Image (cartoon, rainbow, N blue to C red):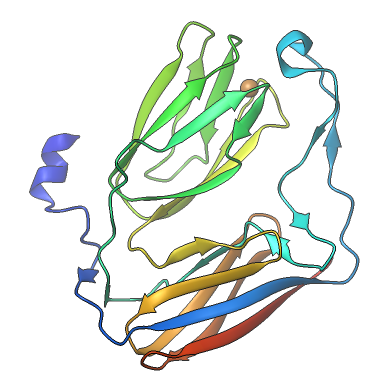
Length: 232
Ligand SMILES: [Cu+2]
């Protein structure tokens, strides 16, 4: 609804103000798994084997490295009011369905983006998000429909699944400002150019849940924060 978007003003809104950041600090840290991580779930391919392949699909939901670092944890500052401007990407972000898996499994893009949902497989997929939210939709994407465009106007964390291939899961993180990141393969993260001040730092993981910690960012300094998620 472009008209509504126009009336509501710039998407960069959400109570967030872009300013030039001088003497910004860094929040750096690690997220580790406390205990022995479970083996990733594995799902047999039960249809469309010619395209999906015959090897079982291994869940990407919980990735724990040899050093116990947890990859793909969303790390962000939920309450930040001002900071550097959020850049809109030059190209549409893409969610590709290839060999009956989503690529990438998880991604962050700014609110106001249009996501290109691509069907590279030439089989029927169904792209479904959680019901009951502004970002809820449920679209069949037959083999001849190679691209669907979907706009995401508000910050959110959106789970995507395919009802045709039950193992397919993805996460879209729609950011309201640039202070969002994902942990790397070692569970490490860094948020830079944060205006000095006190913040709540939030973590979100698709199976482990959420955690928060209070952090104080000092000018031109790095604050270190460690998080642990306990195994079930
Ligand atoms: Cu599918």
